[in-house]
Each structure stands twice: as C-alpha cells, then as structure tokens.
Image (cartoon, rainbow, N blue to C red):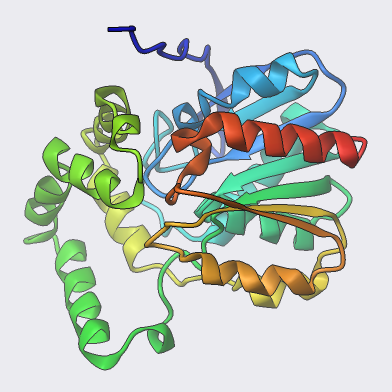
Length: 292
C-alpha cells in the first residue's frame, strides 16, 4: 500500500486587530499578492493543499483565520459579514499594501465579492469557489415548515440554557465527519486531520457563542446585489455535486462582463481541498491569462 502524502503544516504568525489576536500565514516571494479566505467553521489550514502550489508558481500567498474561527480569538461580538470585511480591509492595509487577488470558498467567496464591490482600489480580481449566497438563508428562501424549524433551532442554540448542550452535540467528531461526508464526494478526502482541524477550534472558549451569533446573524448582501458593482475579472469554480450551494447558483455569474466559469466534476462544497490539483490548475491558468 502506498502511503498517503500529507501536506506540510503551514507556518503561522499572529496579528492584532482591535485588541483581538488573529492567526495568519504568508508564503512565497512573488510580487503579486493573493489572499485566501476560508468558509464557515474552517480556517487557513483548509488551504494547505493550495498555498504551497500557488507560492511555488511565483505568488505571495496570504491566508488568515477569520475572527471567531480557527486559532484566532473568539470574543463575544455580533458576527456579521461586514465585521469580517472591515477586518480584511485592515489586514490588507497593514500587511499587504498592494492590489491583491482574492480566493474565497463559500462564505469566503461572498466576502470576496463584498471586498471587490467596496474596495476596488485594493482588489484586482477574485476566484470564487462554491460561493455562498449569504451568511444564512433569507426567510424567503425557506418554505414555512423549514423556516419555523430553523427559527426554533436558532433560538435554542442562542439560549444560555440549551445552547451549550446543543453545541456540544453538534461539534462531536463523528457528527463533523458525517457532515463532511455529505459535502465531499470523495470520502477518502475526509481525513482524521481534516476532522481535527474543524473540531479543535470548537473546544476553545467562546466558540459556542460565535456559532450562535453567526447562526442568527443577518445574511448580508446577496451575490446578485453585489455583481452590478463589480468591474474586476472573476474566476468562478463550482463543485457540481455540492448539496449546500447547488451549482445552479452559478448561473447569475454569466451576466458579469468578465467571468470565467468551470464546473468541477464529482466534487462537493470544498473542491479546493477535495480535488486540489484540478482547482490549482484552473486558478494558475486564470491568473496567467489575466497577467496577474
């Protein structure tokens, strides 16, 4: 049996933002900067199969754990997409300081769109990987029984009485693994290391309050609202078997004047981790075509 090659752990640094400690990494010596933004519940480690490849191709690659996730602090705040966009803009101003290309998965993709629309002077373009339509479902996106169920669950998770109990159930390693099996087509990609990467931050103080805050936060602007304000080029990659953000959601990007779209066959919500070679090739080809 051939041993599975495990990615080398990324060296990390800390950055202070409004008295909060943020974990980040930077790899590569290129003149063009990339900033990679993870999805809900993940961390910069979710890019460990992409960062070394992008850096070796001549790019300076940054990634950070958003406030509330990974190894970053988890203070008792109201977590919104606007909070994270403010954080990312400040990180850019202090650490990057030149127009960057964003690469975002899920919620990281939505944050990328917001940054493109809000700060065109700091962004040259973006790669969206199974971009989320919002931080949470909007009420009109759910039928009435499901809307009631989700509303009741959100209240229970936010309650100081029932919230910790429910969170402890949700964050069990077996439940994390089963959730990953739903959104990864290739079960061999759901490794013990991946489960541990998602589980470990959930044990830190404040993690349950972060989860409750995110679950009850406003969804934020939708991609369809943001796209008319975006002039930069986009690469849209989408796992065609994603049950969370089905590939039908990619149709709205065809209206953008400068978009390249590739479905990622037999992949789920996180193709950059599930089929990294395919995603890395698409990203590097697009970056070269854009002369980034």
